[in-house]
Length: 78
Image (cartoon, rainbow, N blue to C red):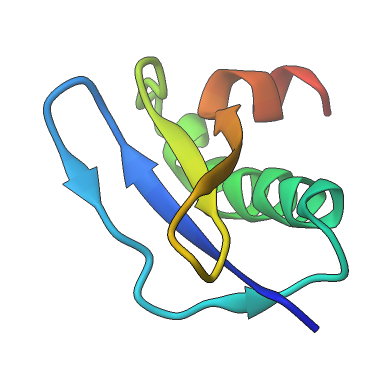
């Protein structure tokens, strides 16, 4: 099963995802990214922190970006 890496990007920073997660496709990796964003941001949002300007770049094992998911998009699609 292929591995996908969730890199966090803002306008000024890039934090590479060090450990890949296995998903059957990039579409399933996208759903996994949305779930991870929701889980991670729930406490921050309840404290009033903003999430604008952040997104996951989902890369395949070769390093190519295959999907992009903004944090705002993940929360809105809840």
